Length: 162
Image (cartoon, rainbow, N blue to C red; front, side, top):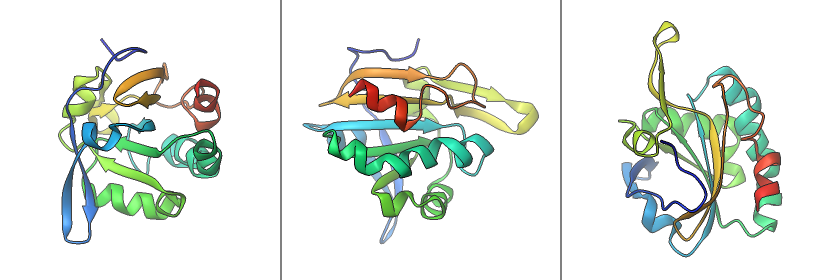
């Protein structure tokens, strides 16, 4: 079962590339006392993720922040090095979007958003979604029916939930 409004985020450790190399990020500590938008993509550098989903957040980062969002976080079941490079290539870093790796998919599985598509090499990946979290509690959760579309999880749609 996936998360829904009213649920609390599970305890989770994600990774990002810091100045000294890979660093763990405790998601619960990061979101404590903040309004946060978290969105997930099936894979960095994959078509819809790179052509629609991430660009919607890069384009609308300032508008989200103007609506009171303290942090914008992108999560993907990729390694920390891929997420770091993709974030730079997509302009996420410049827009203030954190790109975090869920390398073992433990967070993704804990929230019930994992899927596999072996024919294209996607194993234990994340379904596409976006959520609003206030101080650790999910206030809006919008998931896509198919990993190849970005209809309800783009920044334009999550802004309506703020």
